[in-house]
Amino acid sequence: MGKIAALTMVRNDDFFLGKWTEYYGRMLGKDNLFIYFDGEDQVVPACAEGCNVTVIPRVSGNVSVSDKLRINILSARAAKLLKRYDMVIGTDVDEFLAVDPALKMSLPEFLSSQNIVGRNSLSGLGCDIIYNSEYGVLDRSKTLLSQRRAALLSTRYTKTSVLCAPVQWGSGFHRTRKGDFYICKGLYLFHFGCADPSIIGNKLSDKDLSSRGWDRHLRKRRRLIETLPSLEWREWDEWTRKARLIQTIVRLPYTWNKPAMLNLRIKVRVPERFANIV
Picture 1: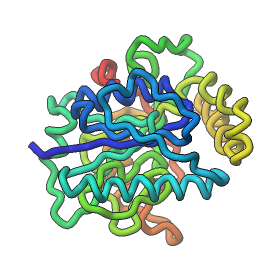
Picture 2: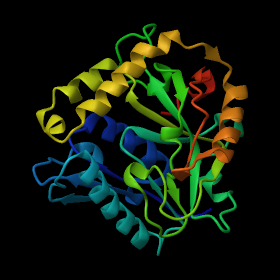
Picture 3: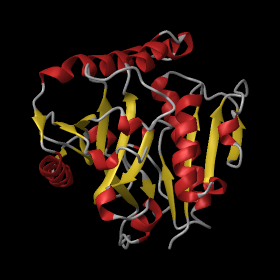
Picture 4: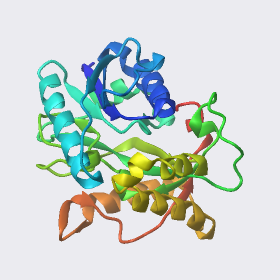
């Protein structure tokens, strides 16, 4: 089985970092996790114990500029890690790369089974977990997918999350600067930034994020929650298969190496078999 590392960069998000270290630590071992804290004012929480932790000077600039600076740091680190690891997973702290439990394979087993000849990255199908009015208050002591199962199949979160070669990521891991996507059957990237209105509300009240231009993006997330009830439920197995095919084939002329989905907004319910994964 291949040797796999995971890395992320975080600022003021101990809750999701705790989930991130628990999840990827269980899969890969905490000694193979690399966490970068954005700002020397950050206090390293207990959940990072056993991981490789680096506190860096605050990455300055608005959201567009700082995102590019952050991903440049992580791309350079991934390139060094790939000298001793076979693959490097890169995600935000609220993103979890997961294998369909029906395959009865761990994440390392699944990734190690993939043919990476001629590929510089692997991707899971993007699933944006959205708050639904049928849900109660998020219990942070329980698994997330046991409480939140409504998802939009999202090209935004079909990311180049796994590097197999030392190439440059685009901002937010959304693409690599060289090469196309390979969206693995049975692999999903779950994003939880829209899983509860309080998550968005807390960030909207953060003056630091506001000064960096995050308000527009966060309000867009809130509109997704408001829009969700108007969308028809679709069947998971059918539409994840269709979405993977569409995203593999369709590209927009001005973003040739990012997946597109013909403006389809597909709402699905994540199957019960995923409930205890994240």
